Every structure is written in structure tokens, then in C-alpha cells.
Amino acid sequence: MEHTTDLHERLVHLPIQANPALVEHAEQRAQNVQNRIADRITTFAGSMRFVYIHIAWFGLWIGLGVEKYPFGLLTMIVSLEAIFLSTFVMIAQNRLSALADLRAQADYEVNVRAEAEVAKILALVQSLVEHHVESEAPPVK
Image (tube, rainbow, N blue to C red; front, side):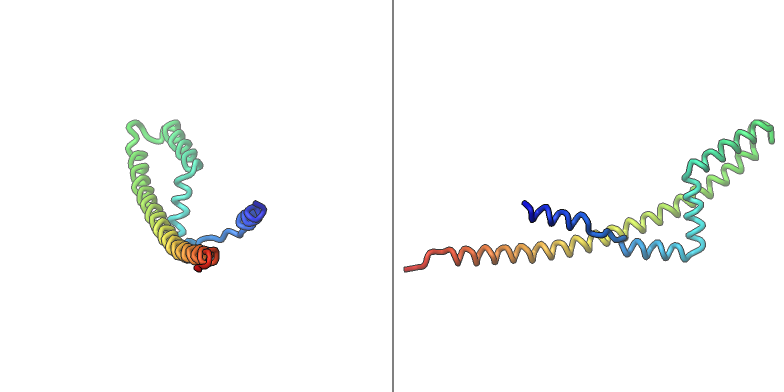
């Protein structure tokens, strides 16, 4: 049992490295100005700060009487904003889809390597069992 605990301790303290494919993807996105702008807008639009700003904006617009009901200009501005925000959401979804594809490919590669290692270990165990059976067999008289 002591050996198992020692192995567990060594495995727990192994350094965890970032997935190289994901790091490369992030670096490529950071090089493109359009991607950086889209990422910042999407991050901001998905925040509570964005919600609070809109609550204040709508409240002031209506409260100060910038225009009369049915608020045609406000409706047009908000509709245009919704069009652009939906575009940025789609951009973010495409980016997340690309990241998911990279993760899936990395998982597949790890699984293939692990399967090959398990096959090697299985073959080694089988040869050890065969060797053990042969060495323990009673001599033929």
C-alpha cells in the first residue's frame, strides 16, 4: 500500500500544462485586431456592467423625456444594437466551436496513445504470466 500512496503523491504533484493547440489558437486570435475587438465586445456585452449601463440609459431616456411614447428612436437604436450584438455572439460561438474541435482532436490523440500503451502493457503482462506459468510448471518425467 505504501508504494501506491507514493505513486499517487507523485501523480498529484505533476505540473499541469496548457493544451498547446489551445495556446496556439489564442495566440493566433490575439494577432488579429478584428478578433481582439470582437472578443472584447462579446466579453463586455456578456457582463452585468452592460446590463446596468442599459438600465441607466433606458431609465434616463424615458425619465428625461428625450422623446415621447412609443420611443421610435430608442427602438431603432436598440434594434441596431441587437443586430450587431447577435453578430458578435455568432463570432464568439464560432470561436468556441473551433476551440471545441481542437480539444476533441487533442483528446482523440491522447486516447490513441493511451490505447497503444495499454496494448503494450497487456502484452507485457501476458508474457509475464506465460513465463511465470512455465517456470512453475512441474518438470515432466
